[in-house]
Length: 192
Ligand code: GRF
Image 1: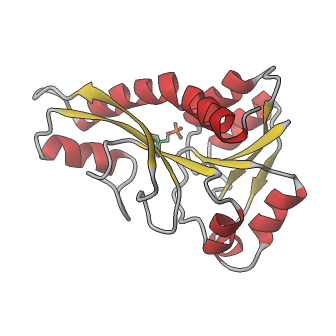
Image 2 (image 1 turned 60 degrees about the horizontal axis):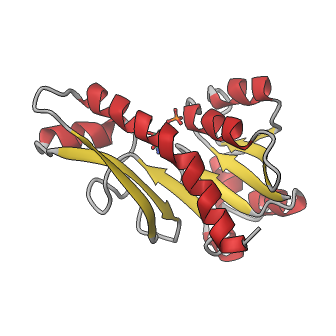
């Protein structure tokens, strides 16, 4: 069984969608949901879904090997970032080469980088008058939002759209594509 850990900092609707997708899967399982926020709604979702959770602090992630040790102890093969807001430290990136995927709610390389998350991304897209936005699923390297792109999907942005409207369209794309792209990327890479 290939074991996935999902890291999420917020609501966790993508995490939940991914868990549903892999329920009963013959080769891939969601073994763990990790968060840096003790009050993140993703913890409620994980409880209902019966997925074990761990909460860690920013320092436990960035200093020392607490999180890496945990991932290794649980024999985690892949890491999925689903609305995770902290930078993944070098020790984890080195130990999981091409085994960490992130989803970004815009069409990278535009509207990415430090500080570009959540509603800020959609507000920037609307303010710039972009005719379209979308999602980018990419490998994670040492720089925010700069790893190789695996998949993109687009949605139109109408001149009447608010940032909330764009967020809703982008969420639909995330739910439709992220689990399938994770499955396909793992299958291609490990040929299970
Ligand atoms: C998503 O839009 C994702 O692309 C971004 O953060 C949001 C997380 O939403 N990185 P949720 O917590 O999965 O509901």
